[in-house]
Amino acid sequence: MLLALPFPMIDPVLVEIGPFALRWYALAYIAGIVLGWMLARRMVALAPRIATQEQVDDFVTWATLGVILGGRLGYVLFYRPGYYITAPHEALYVWQGGMSFHGGMLGVIVAAIWFCRGQGLNPLAFGDRIAPVVPIGLFFGRVANFINGELWGRATDVPWAMVFPTGGPDPRHPSQLYQAGMEGIALLILLQLMVRQPALRDRPGLLTGTFLAGYGVARFIGEFFRQPDAHLGFLFAGATMGQLLSLPMIAVGLFLILRSKRAVTA
Image 1 (cartoon, rainbow, N blue to C red):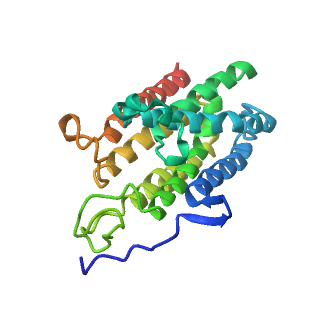
Image 2: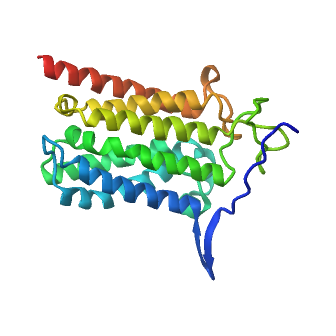
């Protein structure tokens, strides 16, 4: 423990004025949505034009609802179904925490399909302009997890291990930062390099598939360092819930990547 790095004790509440409190976690959502929105407006301006910037503006509301409703519903169904069966009204208590990225992703996909049908847009092509900005939100979300001292890693003796306030006396991997680097920074760089290649933009579904597969792989690797949820533990073949939920993402992502290749060479 003497070799563990001190955990930076940052107040989870950024600003508090009377009953109003702005938390870092809420700020992470706001920053992810606003910066992603600004960058997505630039992405749709690239040739071939898939949508207008005004349509991106309209989609932000749909995406926000998809993230919040899907993320909460995903947490209830994937991580705590037994608890919420006994207290279903608490599923609405989003202020108590508990969000699932996989659920939020499904919520955004449903919102995007619904939005594209109403606007007459190609869902895969539209997704190729939206997917490259999603890692921004993932990065800020993982940083907020770190600031909150939650979702910490497994016990370890690496020199950069930390003792988290709610993680007991053992030094642990700062796995939130690992995931911020893989799911956020690395995936963002990869997708931004790809979206700037005209030949790749002409393959509907390629960027969407790359995001799905890329996130799935990054999350699967990150789970090897992250402590499983105490009420779930290790599941099938020693995998965590995060790893099991990432496998379908990888499969769908690879399918879209291969499908886009066949569409070009056909």
